[in-house]
Length: 290
Image (cartoon, rainbow, N blue to C red; front, side, top):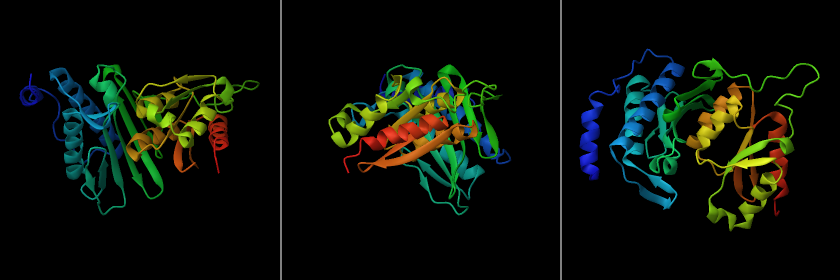
């Protein structure tokens, strides 16, 4: 089926899909939850109708019509529900706003996975101001997992409070204190960056400091799982705001720690328990050539 034919089928099906206008009376958390649910379900529906990807910077950095449609939907709803707020989207949405607050949109995080039939992709959104992220929401449609949390609300997964960062009973070492050498680390690095010693050296130092490595291809899905305890910690370089802020807000709201460290001219983003984050930072810095 052609791209235009696919879009016609999508528009027909959307007549039965819940993409109704959202109420401006929703609070920020309710709005964020509704937006990622709608964006994720819209993208999934479009994939089921048939999609082709377009290369952005490499064979693994792609964009689809679903990315654009999901971002356009979120932008339209935010312009109506939060007209004074700014908007920043991965696929080009950009509104300055007057409130000092900005919604940061990633309509489909893990587009390579999405395009190739994997369930490991999500829609994500964050709200930030000059102090940093206020909230984050991440929805993984095919797993029906929705992580939500921020400065005014503890982190949840499908409405259940996340407790993986709570200290253990007396005499036990909680996840917050567990050393990196006993933890698995999720990460991502494009193969071309491994050919650059300025990037490869700090990455290798951090990677070899962990007990195991996991590489799945969606930073927001990874960070949601750091918050709920399925993954222990995470590090990655050069993450744009839409790949970092939603998950950062949720990890912090779950009681975890985050950090950003500059090594060899690259910024590295780190999340996990307090000890793991501190040791990841030290490992990355040990790869400095300066």
